Length: 424
Image (cartoon, rainbow, N blue to C red; front, side, top):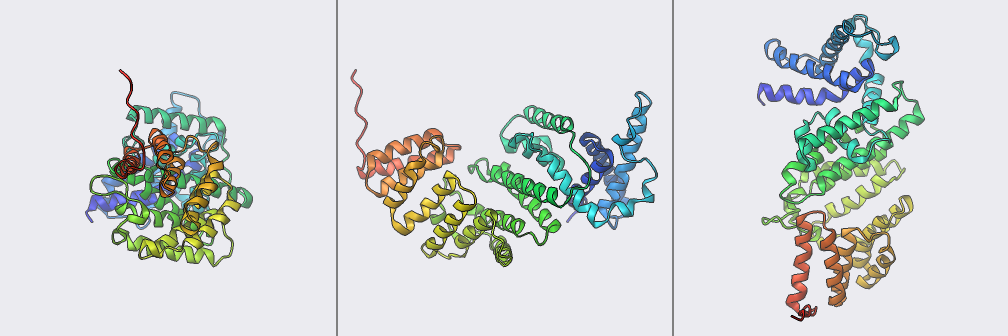
């Protein structure tokens, strides 16, 4: 690893802790971010000459705090000083840096930082964007590219999110046990949203959006270090690893979607799978099942099957039934119907999903599955209608192309009638 690469890696790893501590000191996102950026610039000048510090996070906090205090004092020459409770005490940082970096502050600082980024007043897209900027340190350009929007639009989105956070008056006190548990659930949901933003893509967009999956996994691992005995965080981390392990096999050379059962399992990342399976087993030993653990257990059954036909669909059906009890949702039932089709046949699965249509009338995957089940039942004309609806709702070009492939197969097999010609 080159010197510059090592410094970049060290800064990235230290960023959540340093940003969390600086936010606690200054109680303002912009001030904390400016102080951290200044500390990073000084690290780029200092570390190559003097060697890496023993604790990069502590170094960045110490330098960033001093830089931020200097900036506050300079601004005070042109404006009244802020109230005392708006910034931390301005005594010499060296006097209490050790106390500030104890284990309790470390966990609370990072959790507070993550929780502020996923404040309930923010829409999900703004939560993800501000977390990727503040916690992960992605540039506005990188985030905009991942979300497929313009750089200025993303800058405005992040600015609005910061303004809403400032207006919300988020408390900076150390959270109690109950609040900490509530914060953890919100943070876990935000991390999962980040992952899904990266996972829901087509082959052409994958290089730009894959970093979102990788960043979500990094954040999940960070949470796991903070909450090492929390089975749901183990389940979340395992779920992300097991899903991302399949990334190399999700698209073929032409960029077309490859369904799970048709994927080349030799392309799956064995290292990620092994890590994910170990976490699933460890989480389940706690005997405190939760939604992330159940989803991870389902992903684990797919990962353990060396061939698609070895998949334990009976167990997957049971797990989805448990997930339905924990998180009743038409999407969960739709996913369970796939397992039911493998266990009890397409007719049983179709009967299960038909009542869901009013609630899933705008959902691509509902009509894709319905068309597939109808095709298996040799009801070609009805399948064509469902597939046409799926194409209209497709989120990506790859999804639309995948459905068109089924329609072409129906036409080739003569399972559907050709459209009537319009009269001239």
